[in-house]
Length: 330
Image (cartoon, rainbow, N blue to C red; front, side, top):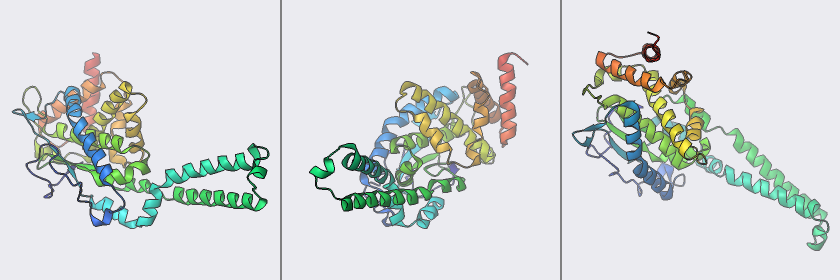
């Protein structure tokens, strides 16, 4: 989400110059690891250029000025205050247990399988292993404890709280400095709870923030720009809608290339936990028209020519009008 300047960001940074690998804040020790940071860093490094190229093709806009990237990009070990508060409300032991939930669930399933084999599935196994009725009860009690633990962990809905935070939790685009900051600590903490990989959450976040940058500073073929002051006053649902639309489109394209590792599924999984302002683009997607991309692109060009703040509804009206013209209905 477009944000205010952050003095902790290297103002001269164009790519990954900020390396917080050895700078895990004390509050997050034991919650994140160096390996997670490196996975996020590698993902950003490997995909940022590709995503910029695809966004340039989709938007018809250019984010480079005189051969240099107009939108800087870095990793940050900052945690947005809204997320910081959420994490602090959940004690570290509970959060660590929540992160172990998949492993505990796997242990439970394996234990049930062994119980069935040892006491019922293989006739005579208990006799050979000298298992008694007491052993069977102990094993059963152990399984019941695992079931109780997994049930309690299932009741802890950490990610549901994300819907209450009406800002980008895993990255930010800073309008005044034209910088993107990827928050690796929240990505590392929440990816598993959301149910997607760290790499996929990083990619979805990166596309979203780059889309903010393109729709803000991108210039069209006539060299026209958004008026920054006007753009910052546009309705949040519109600003997030544009970033979300291009995130949806790019993740779907990439998933079509690699169906076994669906980035679009990750986008949809994250969308379930995002607040209403992040769902405005869904109505645009429901037009289900091959011309919708062009209609949105033309709406962007028209909006920047007016140099005034736009509401979500007014921008949607532009999209609908463009669709009619493109279909030859007007």
